[in-house]
Amino acid sequence: MSTTVKERNTMKGFGPGVVSSDVKSHANDPAVLRQVEKAMETLKRVGLPKQKNK
Image (cartoon, one colour):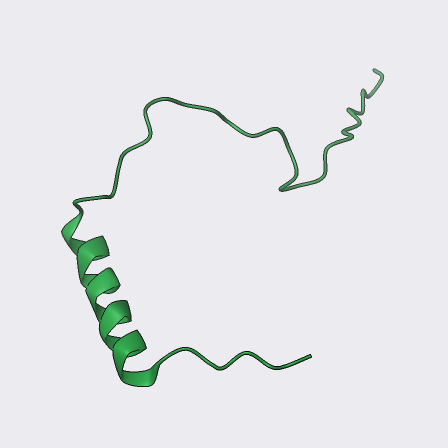
């Protein structure tokens, strides 16, 4: 009995993407809104780093 070996050219994680129109929007998700509010408060408190002059 012979053995058949399948060769793959696609590396793990680099395959073709999946396109779907059934993607859920997270615009009004309470968990996402809490994270955005927390991030905004942190940015107001800490601020963004200054850009370095070249």
